Image (cartoon, rainbow, N blue to C red):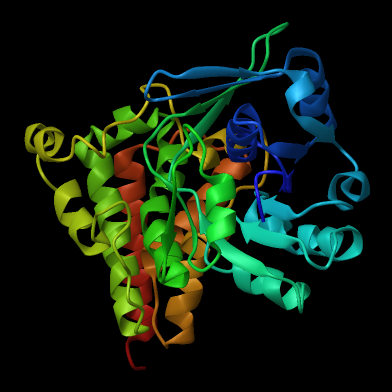
Length: 351
């Protein structure tokens, strides 16, 4: 594999357009498989890639391929970067099986812990690698202007170790790439961090503002502590993510605001307007990934004879958000957590 490899970003939304745009700006052969409205915008205006380091790069429409038809996008692909939501993974696997060469390397750049296994099960005999995107990308659009995809937090794209050619292909300016020997464990570490996606959606606040308020951080700390406890009981080892041990994060989150701001500067290195992808999904009326984040914690617990009442409660609250509720306060969430704990305790007591 070399720099001439044909790269397809399958399901190009915010993250996919940032990754694909960064690669195209560096001269890679990239095609975005995306929804028609976005393809039409980029075909006329191109797209902007910006980041926390104040870099702004415009990718002209002539520098990047655009497709809405999977067969046209995938038929000559050497690498397929899967960036669809977890609920669409099975459908995307079917499209890859139908239209992509058997030799195409498939890389999952998705949230959640089940996507790689699902892709491998649906694509037997094909090379399927795990990947992880730790940063948040915000999409903004202005009428008559190129859509903008802004990396609002820090972090390096990480891929499964073992394919040096793939790493060299994907490593370009503004998109550092690392490898990791335990991508399954890293996926769980990221999932623990991603538990905030749902809280951010409920809060209605930008991420930085939400994390700056201890009332919201305490709720996140409780969720993370529950998930870490379930992982320990399940025998999962959660490696460091971006240099931080997941087990330390709940303790940091519980610090008073002034002390938290002092010791967690890196955690607060977020664009002031950024929100979580789950908040964006709710704002746009889309189904969220809560069933693949908090839902995964609840399923892991159930598989080991346990309960994860806070994870279960968060799924229900986000489902209420999907149905139209938007007025959650930290007190509302805390009260729901308290009820969930009591109900779980009552359900586990012997008759």
